[in-house]
Length: 208
Length: 208
Image (cartoon, rainbow over all chains, first blue to last red; front, side, top):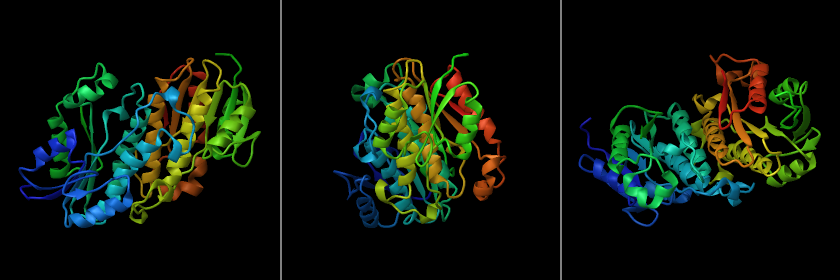
């Protein structure tokens, strides 16, 4: 396990992405990516951007995602609508299918034995006001990695990390998470290390 | 609990829908709906069809859904794509958002104290070949009902039923479910009764 890996980190500029970079960069080579910054530009909501970004990244042992947008909206404000017009559309197109598409593209490019790690979140198991999109999307990501793991070629592994709210994010998200015990983002970053540097696949590593 | 309820049953013509009708019709008034048959035409993939169908149904105490399509495709055959072009698009637009939109429309029309029951499935917890879309969608439905339940108005309840493969469907689905113990569809129908005639909300009733 002392092998030095080349890791693409998508969403590198956020609170979580920076913590994951700090956790992994002492032992591995990190290629940072984001929609607005990083070594490479990748907008996960755009499949063409994922493909071109991965092509630009070159040979990789791991793809790690810390990016993904969802809407927070009270259920009472959500009307029936097709996905493209729905309040649920952002989460389905960005955090869910953005990460699924990133995983599919990584499947076709990673070195044998490589790994893919996606970001989910505690709302998969926990209902909060305005959180129905995040709950839906996070649970879908967990189930996707479980299912995709058994069909991955070349010994590729795929896992998700599902953290609760971060101490470092309470200024922004605290009102949604009253009464929750936040965790230091460095703990969530260690769960990414466990996925990238461990041997498990199809798992969701919860950080609660 | 001896009250006679008026229940809209969407997907009434399928294997599960017929079993749910057989379970509930001795005690309640069933309005059947489907995309091609039934008292009312509802295609859950079309929000306008949901709205007009519910308007046509009149006063209701419960909406029950036994409809929802997903693609079964080997992961190796799935390429990165936007939702509208993706192999995952059918499941997201039909079984997931079709049922979410049905629930949102029912929320606005059901009598106080009424209930909504959606259909999920065992693949939320179980990976099979070609099943990644079904896994993703079924888990998303479970999490949606958990989250939506806490935001429902007027004491409305919402649950999901998650059955394994039916004995009656093994001729069609058996090759996907080798080694699974199938259940009689009548057992899954009783889980719908538990949702409609019980008091729980935000739950997934598993039939394994």
